Image (cartoon, rainbow, N blue to C red; front, top):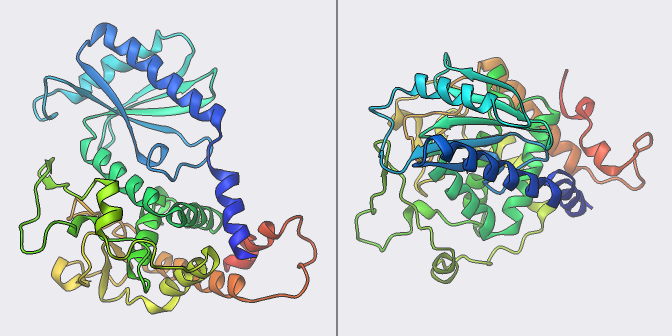
Length: 340
């Protein structure tokens, strides 16, 4: 039963063919237009819109780089963003174009009227692009990873614990938590791609913004060389309840860090991160703790959501609960998952 709920959720939330066509259309449209005045510019998608875990109608995150400029170190990003925004304002079909230059990462926000899609363009978000490649390879290695990614994103959305700007965790943080669990379950569903270099050799380097963004990125080789491939035969439902159970109780969030880059346990002491709340290390930008912005109260609230979820999904019932249109509505009822 829960297997079919998981599959339904992924089907209901993944973008459909027309939307994917619209995205390509917007990307090509912008690419063509921007190349007219900046011939060496290149646009690439990053983030949830291209990491295999995209929700329907989520905005596009686009990174703009120049072929002959390696980093943004010597660029005046603010004036470039302002100029870009002025130019995009003249583009046919673009609405609500604004330059936001006060943020940590200056962006141009825009709305493509015909496709009804929002997009954010930033400059040299190159580390985020590597991140997107890493996540999308994980999503691609086992279909269960992708489906469960949709489950955890919907779970966080319904429980209202998936918005970093409002003091909870980002959906990206939940995807990392899921990948981490799938690396830790026995037998593992996923390998640790950042450790898949020949034993006894140094980890190769792919330096991006001063961080080593190397990971084993050849899917065919991962499948043939990782001994654990396809060894885990658990169903989606078992893995989903296992995931809820893992963070509801098994996981020592006081002492350890969620880290998908190494199999050895990573302690908060090593990182010098001393908050009692859940700590989640970015796989490349190692100084970034995705749990840094949450309060103790929020940490407890998130943990409660996992505990309630474990109980709700883990309790069998004989007949369908009354008052729900679908079984999915029952499992994703915010009243049942949260404590107000």
